Length: 341
Ligand code: 5MM
Image (cartoon, rainbow, N blue to C red; front, side, top):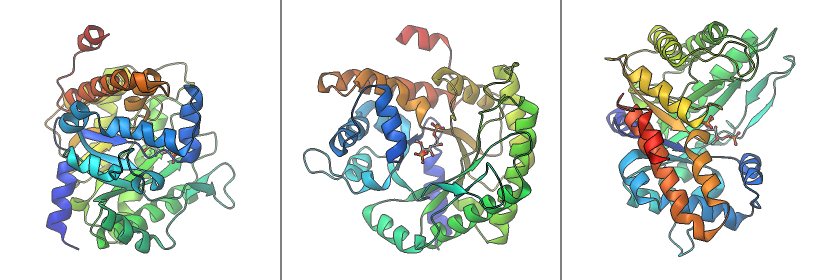
């Protein structure tokens, strides 16, 4: 492992004024997204949609440091035969790959999940590196309920995340470590902080045990937010303060950057939260975005599967990317949203 090079890539992924596009929807998830805009989820439509995003020059060149791809996409070519990975590289952005293989029920833990995909991961990483991937992503899913999460689920998922991260670094690939505590449910923000802190602490303990170099990774956590069904929704300032305090307590300063998931927040909420956190600096690590839905909902709606809407979809993508890029520097203003509308 060349740690200096891993660190260089990790820092580039969290360049101030840039962030990561999570375009790694698995087949089931992209079908759900396409159903919502009444587009059939065929291989060609998935290719056309992703090509539209990666050819969006303003967004990709200025605001997107890296793109997380799904296995199908990393091997796909654009309509003119150019590999989609090359489009990303040509825009000066870094290609990355989701390498987990989804979740399965965790035995003896009703309602809880374990992320799978470690078998043969070393072989797969080698092929992805040859294709151009310089970082990877693995997502663990932790749900909050009356009697969950169990320590078993937190431990098993942290162990898998650390195994994955160690394998990535051995293959000269920067691991994005994503332990996601879901925001479904009626819990309040303090319960989210309590559970997320336990998850982060266990994750970093496992990363240490498995000798993962913190300088060569990026953390992708959830923010501290109220559950979607909680009667009291914490305001932006409280989300920012509690998230930053929680991260300061749990995330070592050797980690170069933290790139949040949006997790079901509205587009503007996800931007406002990131912006408010960056205004609380100086911080020990760079804070940016690695959004899926909060970057793609607008372009998907604008596109609707029609080639005549490609320019409008690219403009919608560029707008959200620019808003989040400003938030990554604490320079976003809500007035900018209205102006664009
Ligand atoms: C884009 O969605 C990703 C893939 O999800 P599935 O494996 O369930 O298809 C997801 O992992 C994503 O990278 C992150 O959760 C961030 O996405 P959001 O939409 O939460 O910002």
